[in-house]
Amino acid sequence: MKIIPLLIISLFLISCSKEEWRCVADSNLDAMYSMSSSGEMGSADKGCTCDEIRAFEYKTFREVDEEALKK
Image 1 (tube, one colour):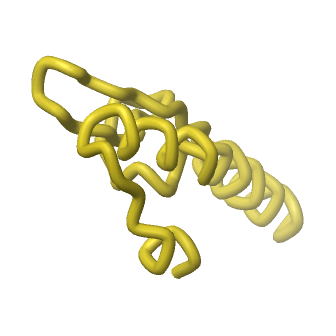
Image 2: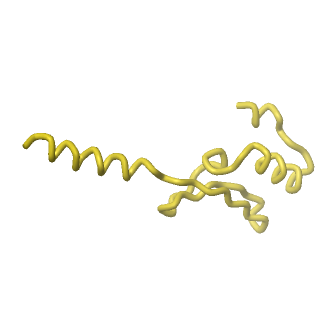
């Protein structure tokens, strides 16, 4: 009987941890950020690839901070 509550809790924890992030580049704000499948905003590195960040920085600022991308 103790296994059923554990299974329910495990299922809940697994379903909550599958957050998917997508990359958003807003040229009106000169900003790049990530948006989760639940609508939460986060830093660009959560959903954007290094190539996407590099292209955005170059297009927006005409230079790329390679040291920051390495981190």
